[in-house]
Image 1 (cartoon, rainbow, N blue to C red):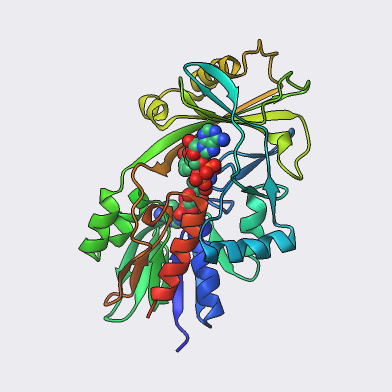
Image 2 (cartoon, rainbow, N blue to C red):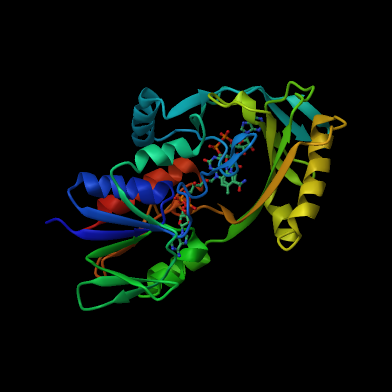
Length: 324
Ligand code: FAD
Ligand code: NAD
């Protein structure tokens, strides 16, 4: 039987669930509070190029995800990225080459979500605040302006765990499970320089000071523009600086960046800061997805699996496969 299904959240988990359910002949509607799509796999358009402000790259370990990735590679939506990898710790900066194959959306991370959404029905700019059971069988969604959407036979919640808790309250088990998941923030700063910085570093795992990660935009396939850099704070630093203003954060993280590279930085031509309140699951779970089939209510997201892009995609697919 073809069901009418709502999915809240158009990140990779929601998109993966939507594609799986559409493939089974169901009628699916996606809702996302954000104007864009792709969730935490986001890129921001600037005069210095489209910069990846969220997820930086992904790895593919599960055979089902590798199979899907091959399709994306064949279509040119994703490409391999092999940066000159470094690490920075209390001893300093050192090359840190490895054998790991890494991938990015091409020519930007959001290329993936944009292509995967083709043919799907997405209502963007709609924040769902409540799920209402309108009879024994059906759900209505309510947005923050009091507007109702529905009726739906099934609802999948594909938001980060803290945002899923209020939406899952009809199932105390699911709501409690989501409430247990601790999610840490992350500050991301993008800096663009019209003159190329004098360094060989293209990506760096940072284990000392406020930062966690540094990457060079132009080292990724298909990118162009200025010598832009993405710098991301550690979860601990972001937690301590959750309420710090964007200007202060930019200044402190830029200083830490200069220290990692060991450079006196020229004045950047562009600075941009973004705070992710729900960036990463502190201890990712291994549930795959959550289901209350008696209510027709399901939950998925990176927090149900590995806290990574691959986990988000697999979790969405698992939630979709459990819909009865
Ligand atoms: P999301 O992408 O968060 O999607 C959830 C969607 O739900 C969002 O679009 C949001 O707008 C929407 N939403 C929330 N509440 C509501 C509501 N009430 N109503 C309507 N819509 C709502 N992973 C990697 O594998 N590699 C990396 O290098 C990497 N780096 C990262 C760096 C940063 C700074 C961040 C923040 C994350 C990073 N990640 C990385 C993690 C990766 O981005 C996530 O695992 C993945 O994108 C999560 O997908 P998702 O669909 O589960 O959730
Ligand atoms: P991966 O295999 O490249 O890295 C996993 C971890 O192994 C890294 O975090 C790093 O600590 C270590 N590592 C890997 N290669 C290294 C090298 N050459 N030198 C030194 N250390 C190395 O990628 P993955 O398993 O797909 O993990 C996804 C990445 O996404 C992780 O780096 C994670 O930190 C990041 N992430 C960040 C956020 C955020 O909020 N900033 C959220 C989710 C995930």
